[in-house]
Length: 126
Image 1 (cartoon, rainbow, N blue to C red):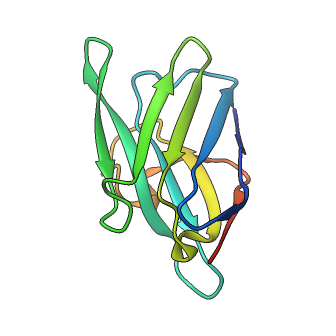
Image 2 (cartoon, one colour):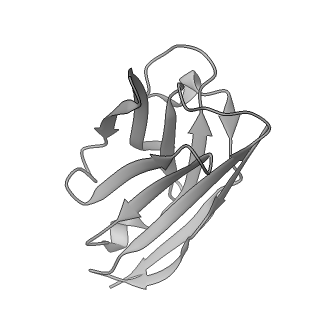
C-alpha cells in the first residue's frame, strides 16, 4: 500500500493550492482518510479528515485553524483524496502529509492512521 501526496509548492498569501493524495495497493473508500501538517519545530497538526458515513457519503472534519478555508474531498474512482486550500496564510507553511486508516479510531488524531504518504511542502509567502 502506498499513498503519494503531491501538489505542494510556493504560493503568495491569499492564494490557493490543491493537494492530491493518490492511494495504490488497496482502496480506502470506506475508511478514514486525512491530512496532517508539520511546520519546522512544531508538532504534527491535524488539518482535515474524511470519514465514511454510508451510502457513498462522508463526514468532513477540519482543524480550527483551517476551517472555512480548506476543503477535503475524494474521488473513489481514482482512489484519490484532495485538499483544496484557499486564502492561504504564511502560517499554513508546512509539510503536508496524507494518511489512511485501515481500522477504527478518531479521524482527528495521527495515531489512528496506519498508512502515511511521504509529504509535500507548502510554502506561503507574505
